[in-house]
Length: 506
Image (cartoon, rainbow, N blue to C red; front, side):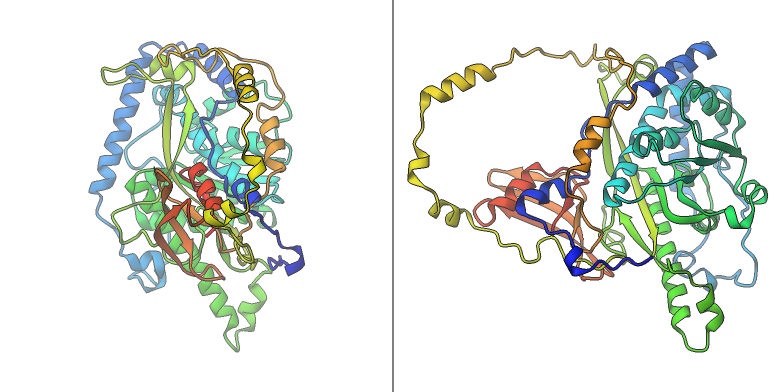
């Protein structure tokens, strides 16, 4: 697949279209009506007593896993991530000794019901946020065959159905917990136009059941699963297997903790190293066999969140790369979750780390600010027409009176996202139509990523941006940028409206 875009076909950005192209984050996400109703129906069917106690026990189990992960000794050195062939077991074939669930948490019926009631909406929101960005960054990408590794109760499947509602034709789910599989099947009962779905207990069972020619998937997902595999070597093995099953895009999502971010960083380094090594070997002389094996889509690059394919500039810092998605709590979450002595809020923030890879070479396109001229505030003031500065106060007063809307305070304790349930074909159809009309940020190296919340002080905005420093996106850096209104009003306007997770055209 040729990723090079002709100069004449490149997107030409203007100061007006920069903001819409850079917008990747979402505000407060409302869980779709279909999913809320499915969760409520499932919980009614289970009729489980002591639900609050079970949800609390599940939360404590997650906390214990987090503590165990922090105490785990590194089973292999950094060389295993960057060059596994230098390890002691060079001559041995890699085999998985620990798998999903070996960290100590077993999803029985009690844990599964508690997970559906408390965690499923939050995991859905993180997956929806990531898939939405992949769709915006890759407008022409429409997966028809999907693999969901560690599918659980189907959070990623529901998010995928919202983002690509018409393109998915076949889904392979890998989930070792029979209780989770049963819950996932129960939740999708009654949905229309479902794709063909097959469930497997492991990757090995999947590969044995499918012909070699049919093993590749357009989209492969592993969400909130790698952190439950205790061995780094086994995580790398699993990700290598998932990458071999990927035809186009691979998405990895983990909790937005230092441990989750570290896992994403390690997997990112390994896949990029592995593909660069293949490309180097294919270019070596007298290596015709390797050249024949190389496909047109040789190599790999990061679709999101990174703006480059070099070493992560946050690796040696005290910071870690993660993002946040706010969601309105469902009735089940509000009914069964507890708060520490304070009223439970009507929303929660799900923090996550992720990376999305695509096979092929990063497109070579012009940077968004190339050839664009910005006026300073002084130059803009010099061009003002004095006649346009005259103010008609009567018109302003009339307009203000017409725009006044009575304010009604919403009690966050009584807030219920299920209050307005309406049957719709697609809850986000309006948003999708608006989104399709906006400018899309290309995959060249000119777009940086806002890593943490911007700090706004008067007429200046401070941003922490991870960006590419080369035109080919081979190397990146982490920089603290201050945008002032006097020097660049247009970029200052964009900076004031940018959020954590948005792109930055610099």
